[in-house]
Length: 262
Image (tube, rainbow, N blue to C red; front, side, top):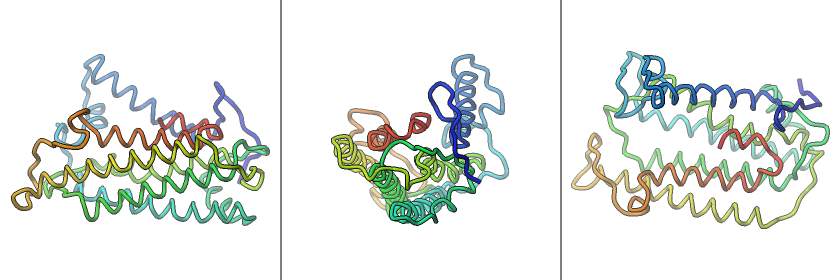
């Protein structure tokens, strides 16, 4: 069922996607305050916040970290279907409405934005998920002993499809959107996306090479050097942030909800 009116709180439309991000943000913020501000390290807060080598709580249903690849299998599949559906929607097909209506995304009678911005944003998200899938399959060297918490695994499976769904959530119905035209925000956003993608890929290559130097050592981890590691401690996270900022530049004027992701 698609709704035809928005309710607004603090300028943000009240949609299922927005409610999801608000709840998730509240959980992470509360966990951060408990662990690092109040220094109240309950088992629940540690369970939610810690991962990788920093994890101090181990449970029986931890799963292999190489399952990280599943995130991008799901994301790439969802994004490709979404992209094709949205392009079809721009040409008059209503299939995309069936795809997203099961998520109960609200629709606006007079949605803001344009079709070009929507297509570019979803295209960039699709490229991002496909590239990360390639890196997981052919670049990254996952440790055979590294584990991933089940709750983090479920979160990863949901996160990327929900990002795309959030972008689409304020653009219903697509046939009410104007066609749009290329602007400086599109161009700058695309250029920033390309630069950030190169940094992101380079960082993952550097990580992988640490375990290939002197023979494959899947369980070792050295000190990364080169690229932006000389300037920032986590260039892969920095680049990922730039990627989301680039997408916001493309679609931010028509999707206030994307601010909740940032």
